[in-house]
Image 1 (cartoon, helix red, strand yellow):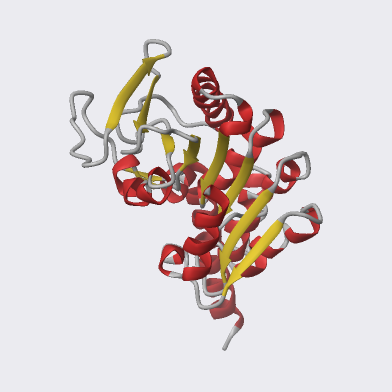
Image 2 (cartoon, helix red, strand yellow):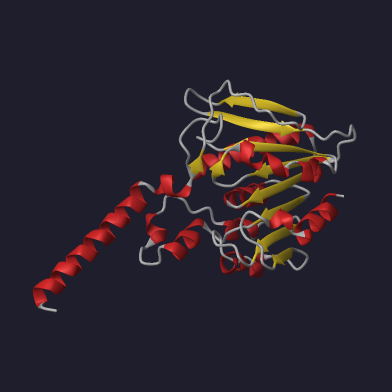
Length: 268
């Protein structure tokens, strides 16, 4: 291969590299988040008793939450649920019976741009909205009756709330060390840590959580790898739990008895 051909291919590789980097930097919200928005007059058809709550925060931002209620009149507390980066509340409502059957209400928020929530998504706003949801739950229930639960993207948000507010326990399903470490796994050729607008350092927040922590992570998770989640182990307190689900993927952990059985025991 002559010198001209080598230079030609080097230019092509450089162009592809730069184009990929620009796409990651300027289109990262499209890459990281996959919301499905709904009209404000949309009516959910959940069979579980529920209440649709919309809180206008300013001209552009509206926080939408769903409060789900157990059939039993004896209520033990509330689960503050922070979902993943896909779709909206309706996608995660299938998990609600695991909590309501034990007498817990569930309060689930949609992030900016998800479902009926509106506004521009930023890391700062994720934390602010999460705190608003906590305060709403805390108006009805004392801190020792509030369980904070995070799934996937929501684990970092859940950990952040638990690091600044009291709760009964923190449960994390498929958590990550921080956002850059997740993206670096897929794009190791880029200086991701300098390029992302989002950090969400779960490891920092988890170190400040005083309440009991339980983590569920599958060994075959291809979205948030087991090796990434395992980096949180050294941060856990001696009484915390990191439960490894052999053969578990990112979205099927509730098919494993180790998860549902443990969740039942935590909620009893």
